[in-house]
Length: 142
Image (cartoon, helix red, strand yellow):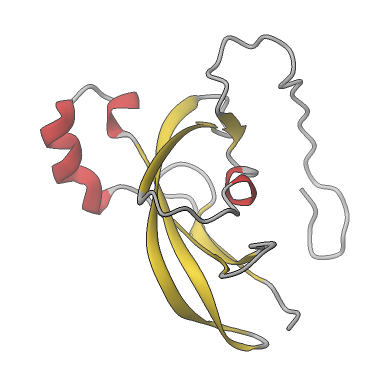
């Protein structure tokens, strides 16, 4: 991770090729938005996210469809996706309570280009656990 002056402020290395005892579709949480840069007609997908406190959590990704997103370079058509955690990974509440709690769970919103190479053009969401500051990243080129 780098600050605004491009100085490295954090470095964490994990050998994901090694047998860590995690599911094969596990990605570091900071890379998950980039790994999802491919749209799909399947509306909901599940992955495992290696959270920054070294906790692996199941997350769901819902494709919201094509939207127009306002960016510094002007409006752009993009495919919106929403990522949210599985509450049952934190506390066992069952599927009904998890569905009821879904509206208050922290969510990450991503917008990807609507054609190849499907680059991430906007990201917004909390950087860390509940209560963490919101982070917004936008692409500046046109």
